[in-house]
Amino acid sequence: MKTPLRNSISLVFGATAMLATALTTTGAAASTAPPGPTPTATTPSSPAAGHCRVVLDRIRPGEKFSRVVSRTCSADRADLGINAETALMTWYQHASYDGASMTYTGLYGPCDKAGYGVRDVGYYDRAWRYSISSFRVHNNCHWTQWYTAVNYGGSDVKYGHGSYAYVGDFWNDRIQSFLMHA
Image (cartoon, rainbow, N blue to C red; front, top):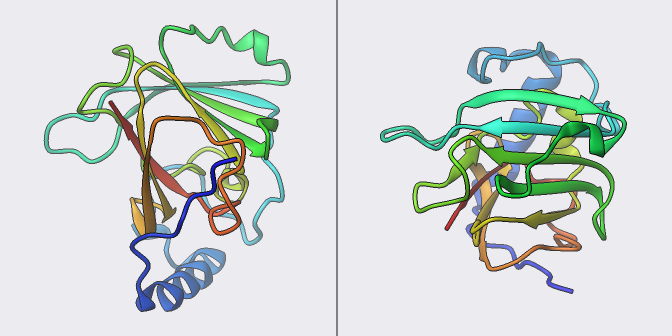
């Protein structure tokens, strides 16, 4: 089992994370969040739908994240019509690829050097910010970089070549944004 090591952690992170959490739960940080659903006063305990598929555009020159083209959810993963040729990453609620899942697919096919990026894993369902325990990568997405805050903030770590049946104790239920590329 691969266990990621912490990387790029600063002393400021703890205070920043506590402040961001406090602002998010009071709604005061709404102006800095990406457009989307209004934050709730409490953090959901698990993702709302059983399985979801999100189609991403490539990261465009001068931008840092991928635009979401579409999103579909279903209780049955087979209903999502995920094309194996365009699947980029699937993350899971529990270790060993178990529980609810979210699959990202690429509008322009597999990962390349520009790659794809998700600036907020909880953009549609806030519970995903606190639920990722394992993930699989597909179609040339050899490199992934995970962050403990939205918009590629907080602590981060970059890993190559492979899927993770468990992201490790530090990262478990803390991944809030990520990048992936060839």
